[in-house]
Length: 148
Image 1 (cartoon, rainbow, N blue to C red):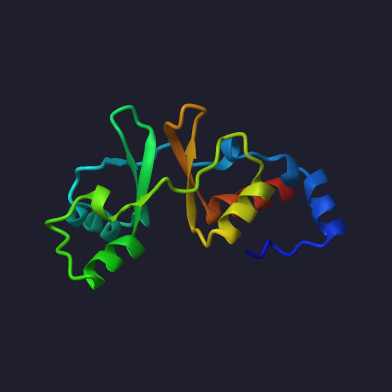
Image 2: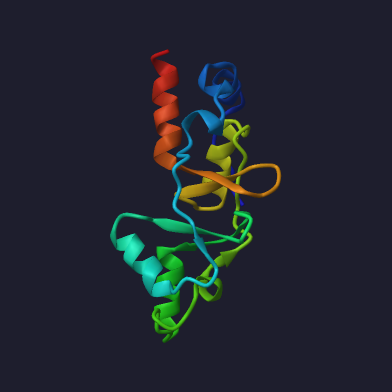
């Protein structure tokens, strides 16, 4: 996989800047809506119509076990599945890429880019979902650091 194209000097300068020291915990969204594995995919589709781009799927202990995106739902439809008859567990991407609140934002840029993601779940050391981070949150962090 390709990495984000920073020349060595540019990346070093960014790492040494205020932005280079910012972490996920500073800009992540903590008020994240998650669902369990048995929720119907049709309900998740309705959530997405209300503006949710993806929905993290958690177990009984709030540990992240998957994520359902618009792509996952469309893929199920493409395969002839009725969203009213399948569960999140059947359509989710299991074991999704995630980050912790201590991950620096430069690393997150690589994670988002290399995995073609719009947003990434944030977990604690026990794997529990504690937030979500979108590309626009990273951009907001960059802009904030530029004016600090």
